[in-house]
Length: 484
Image (tube, rainbow, N blue to C red; front, top):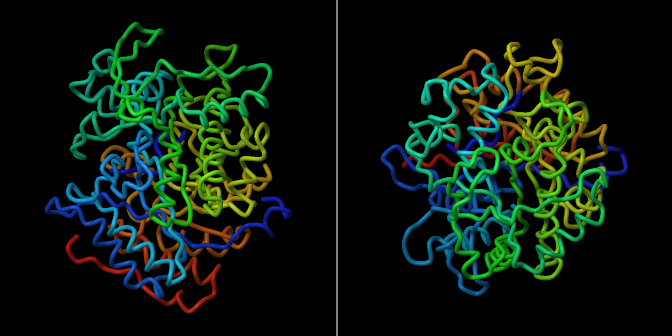
């Protein structure tokens, strides 16, 4: 399962005018059918054939690996880890053809790097996020279930207590990745210099060049040696995956690229604070995220200046109150304070692709204080609250929606505290909160509605399109790929 958010314990008027209006959705190209066949390319082709009538004007193709390698002019996705095809050009020509058809129908197409699995470092997430704050935390049940309550029994054999994905997903440790810090890259070095120049003087940046994908790394806090997830091909070939994503977007003819950064483990491991019990701050994660965004920005300007840059942002990402661990609370607030040019580039410049807030996978479980306050526990009220924090921080933002069963809280463990997008909640958010923001997106186009009381992808797209775009495409429907 490619969850768009995990453990989870809101635009100033000057920006609103500059924001582009869009209604978009993510397409998970590695999706498999019930008989195990990859159907993502077929779904993309169906979208391209109906492009002029589908009720969205933007698509994000997901997910490209943060340790990907793409040589410009090679026209192959062999080392992109997109997992859509295992033969020929690994889906390159088919995706290129679909992009051209969609663009001719008025639909923009972005390439998205990241996603939950391509952000999750199982050892680190188990020990410092899920198991880093005592036993009374939302996902600690995984350590109890698979490690008998002992974090030291969360090991490679059980994928570190299956904290990234449950056994039912059939993943292996090879399915996970981290966002690398490509020390050998000239543009990465430029990016880190930009970060250092405007860093918080109380917390100088510390880069983790010893943490290399597919290489052993010893945790200095425990002495445990593990293999860092991801491919080291980019190291062997001295390539920069962030630069290669830009090259790939150019060769595919895409309109933009998307940074989907969700390394909760990084925030929890590298947090800063005087009190061992918190609250803490996460400057080092702010620096890492900003360096990645700068690297992308530098390469966009040099390689394909027309490309737009979007980012997926956490629901609590602009909340400026104390952070007690377990998520990336305040990350985008920090970026706005220290690196406003990045927020401007993504949110209001000619290259703005949008700061897209994942206002879903929320919980109303009072045991873990997961509501913003006692009066803001329903999904619509939580969405309104979190979107307001982005507005208050002067960060232009787009509202996020999720189709079907939320990924969090775990449906097989705490279903009673899930907050799905029902018809009632969709109507409330679209009428109350969405009019304050010019754009919206949802995860994802072909995700199963699951229950008739939940809003389907077509229903969400039509409602958002009618509210924001006001075009003839708003009466259209999303394709039904029967092979799924």
